[in-house]
Image (tube, rainbow, N blue to C red; front, side):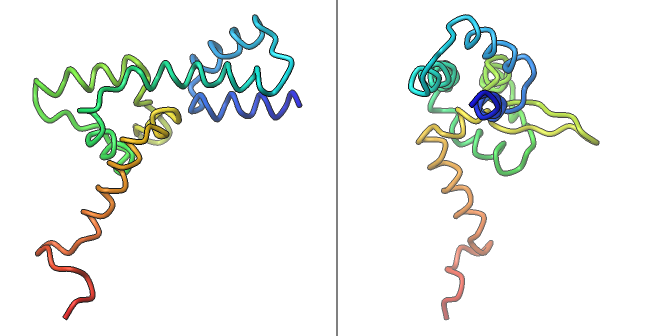
Length: 135
């Protein structure tokens, strides 16, 4: 249905107005009649975001995903941060305060999923490195 497709566009855009408009322009311009055609268009947008993400950014993207914060480690790292922001791989939101999150397509990259899982495991470990519950 029309409402379901609009909901999918909003979800796949991360709620980012500029991206919603871009996606609507493409969808309206190509008028996909089947769900298969519609999903194909959504996948093209997602693929463009995924291609813009280098593997060396995965660990940092995991930090952004879990902390909702954007940390620039040093001038060398600034290039990756700028690339991720300019390609909307990382989205900036403002409610009461500023926060960041990954674009939904970036969150689906297998390497990013693994980096997020690994960072969660690392953070669940006690500070001394011993296994929880051992002894």
